Length: 261
Image 1: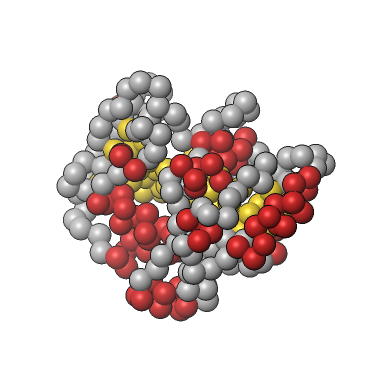
Image 2 (image 1 turned 90 degrees about the horizontal axis):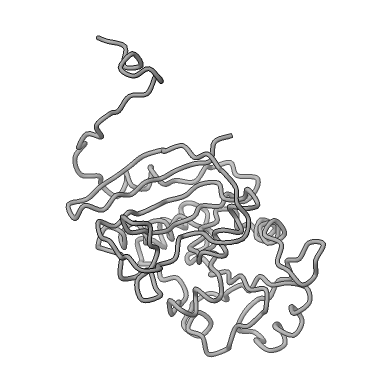
């Protein structure tokens, strides 16, 4: 057999991703399992983009999804200890609390997890209202990760509808993402699933705290000025390694990428 590296002066070569046949639920859980021996938070991002890089249509990501994406969305939520999302995104996407089937609850119990993972809202301003569905339609009390300057007022305003946690570093007017993860780890919530939005995802990327990315590529174009999955003022180059790439009959691609090093 010829050495594939000899096919190009730079030592690169292409491979064709073969069709390995249908993947059942057990295999899907294996492909997306978190490590068993976590001593810190592992942050997994989940996002969807169009072929031209857009992360939303009409302001939300729902228009890009399909049946396969929704199936994987449910699996990733089931595997997580906590679902972290920017408060603005939760409001725009009309978030409610996470919902688990009877089978999912049993799976989580066998993994030593609570039956339903909480939603953790990240907000610098503390602007979360009591009538948001994520606070009113939920089995478990959500968390609000905010800065020291507004934590007391936010807690007083929300009462028992949420657990408000001050997560500032040196600047009491900002949320420190590392401090937020420390607060989650102290509560035993180490399997972290970040569902965005772009500012929150960008913050984790900028601070080197995004350990892996589960990225769905939808077979469609959106054009216009659609947002990216990550945004912010910081520019970093983070190398990721592809763990696997799945597809379905509708032409969606599902990649899992982990940080190098």
